[in-house]
Amino acid sequence: MSSAKFLTLAQAGERVSTPTETIRFWIHVGKLRAFKPGRQVLVREDDLAAMVEASEIGAVREAKAKRARKARAA
Image (cartoon, rainbow, N blue to C red; front, side, top):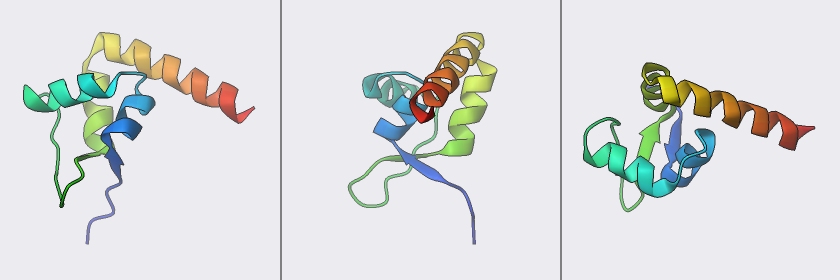
């Protein structure tokens, strides 16, 4: 069994402070793998993190998203 965590497109977009349409585009052009078990499109959290780490701009967005999550939690 796999313990991979899956995210909806909305969750993935929120995680990296990016519109859902951009997540869909990344899937379309092959930058991000997606799975469709039924009607919902899901991405692996690890795949999203790897793609973001590979992108310099993505690293800046991820840092921004982490700060935003901390601010909401406080």
